[in-house]
Length: 339
Image (tube, rainbow, N blue to C red; front, side, top):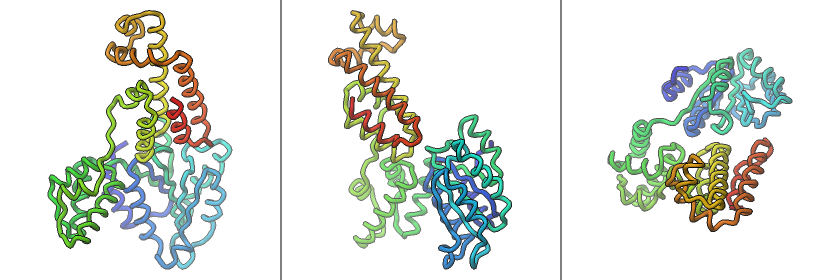
């Protein structure tokens, strides 16, 4: 599937939005929400928006969406429905028939714009099954990927310019490095900096202002999870989970990393108990020697029962996150607190 220039594409759509189904997915929530707001403004007069714009949430709302689609718009040529948390295209079997029905009918209502809004946690669009599902959607599919750092920095500069605030290119680079390239976080940072400049009666922002007002984005090494499981540091792991949630990462991926580390520590514990040196254990287990060397002092301090108790807790957490009614982030937080 050809990569979309999402900024250019959405501008073209807003200029003349066709009726029918729009499926929005991808990790850049700022652009997704911006498009949704612009689309609403383009198709529904502001003074009758309350009569013609509706949001619903949940996979069980297909019947409600059908009811809304059957209603003619009032004092407007269009009616717009936004469906959050639909589960589409992987709808639970009990809701699938109704969901398929509304998806099929969406393009047949000349006055309806139906937007299915999928977070990255719901649908990534990258897997083989995802790509096959996208090809079957009879409507407009829009992938809101993260922009490159260079494009984000140009966007930051334009925002400062629109507020008549001067900032150097190097300080813009510093801001994005400090804050991250997520546009939601950057938008908040820009607003804070511009408000500060206005309060001080200034027309420029410098690096000292950025350091004073914008907190350093937490960065995590590639081995952060393994390091802190080995150290049994629940506060560090909880911080990691909170940050991952704010970035809309998949909790299942984090849990799989935790399980892999817990299993590794149990295997190393048993190797140590059997009297192997860390070099022998590394060879027997097929694990990097340096990793085993780091783990040996830690596992020596952990009773075998405690080591396997945490592994069992990991497996129970895995069962819980596979239950769609679970609070997956809460499950993860409870797990790391038990370490």
